[in-house]
Length: 102
Image (cartoon, rainbow, N blue to C red):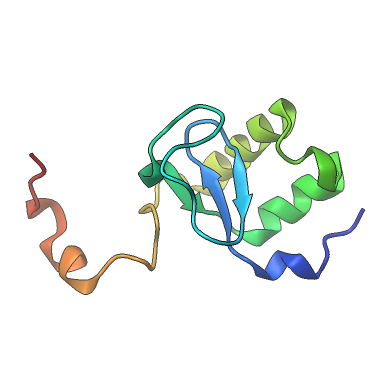
């Protein structure tokens, strides 16, 4: 099955288990592994399109597909980039590593 028009929406991926949510904002916790919302990554659409072609649209959140998704994200270096990229304010970028979280 080919990727369709819906691929224009945001695709959030849990950085811990690989669960995806298409469109909208992720919930506070992952429904699979209960990881916090900050572990979600806005993944590139070509990765999800490849998984749809391999597993089918109905099985993109199966255990095998989640494992493959995390592997593709690791190979592409997307897990190392800042999470929630493009959604952090300029002040946070300027502060860099000087921010302390208590």
